[in-house]
Amino acid sequence: MLNLWKIIILFLFVPMVSCAQEHDPNRETFNELWALLDERYSLFEARGVDWQAVKEKYKPQLNDIGTEQELFDLCCQMISELNDGHTSLIDVISDERCNSFSFSNTPSILGAFESKEAFWKVSDSTLKTNGFNELQLIDQHVFYSFNERLGYIRLNLMSGTYRGFAKALELVKDKEGLILDIRLNPGGNDETLHRIAGRLVDETYISHYKETRIAGTDQYTKLRSWKVEPEGPYQYLKSIALLTSDFTASASDVFTLSLKGRSNVTIVGTPTMGAMSHVESDRLKNGWRVNYSNKRTYSRDMVLYEGKGIPPDVYAESTDTTKDQVILKAIQLLQD
Image (cartoon, rainbow, N blue to C red; front, side):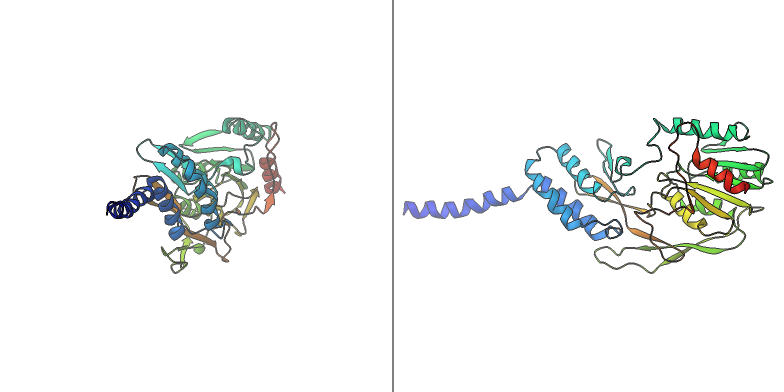
C-alpha cells in the first residue's frame, strides 16, 4: 500500500516540476518579441530575411541566458538580422536601446573620415576653392553658400527645417543652378519633406505610395498615394543637383523619391539608405518597447527601394580626404 502512495505522489509531483520548468520568463519574452514582428513587420521579403530561420538560429542560445541584460543582448542580435533603421528595442527602465541597423553593416559615406566634422571640413574647403563664399548657418540644421553662378544649401535634418530652407532659397533664388546636399540627413517627417519638395516643383503630382501590413496576415491595406504640390510664393525650377549617400535615410529617402525623375533634378552621389517605412511601436509584457516597420513605400512606378536604396542618376563617391568629389561632380554638371 505504501508503494502505491509513493507512485501516486510521484505522478502528482512530476507535472508540477514540469510546469515550473516550462515557466521561463526569458523564453516567453523572446517568443513574444519574435511573434510580434512575425505578425506585424512589413519588410521580411524586401530585406531578404527568413524570420523563422532567424528564430531557430537564436532560440538555442536561450539555454545560456541567465540575466535580463543577457536576454536583451540576445534579442538585439536577433533583430539586427533585419538591418532596418526603423526597427529597435528599448528597455524603458534602464533607457538602453539597440537599433536593428548598424553603419558597420554597410559601406558608409563616412568610411574614409574620422567624423562628420572631418567630412564637412573637406566639403567646405572644396566649395571655397570653387569660388563659394563662407558657409553660413541660417537656421538650425540648414546652411547655405553661393558663388557667382551657383547656390548651395546643406540640409542636415528633414524636420522643423522648412523655414530655414525657405530663407536659404531666397538668398540663392537668382543663381543659375542649385546644389542641395542631403548626404548626412537621417530623416524627419513627411510634412517637412513635402513642403520643401513643393518649393522645387511647379505642378501637383503623386510622389509615392504607401501600404500598411494588416497584423496577423500577409495582406496589406489599400495603397495610399502621397502628393507633392507647389509650395510658397515661388518655386525654384532651374537645374538642381541633389546630393545623396547611404546616410540619406527615412524622410530624406522619401524626399529623394519625391524628386526622382523630375526634369530639372539630377541625383548625384551614391544610393540612399533605403529605409522608408514609418515606425510603429508596441510594448512587450516585461515593459520593453519595440519599434518596427509596418509599412511599405513604393515609387510612382511601384518600385520598392527598401533595403536597396534609391540609385543616383550620376554615381559619385567621396573617398578623397582632400577634396569632395561629389560636390565637384555636381558643379561640373550644373555648369555644363
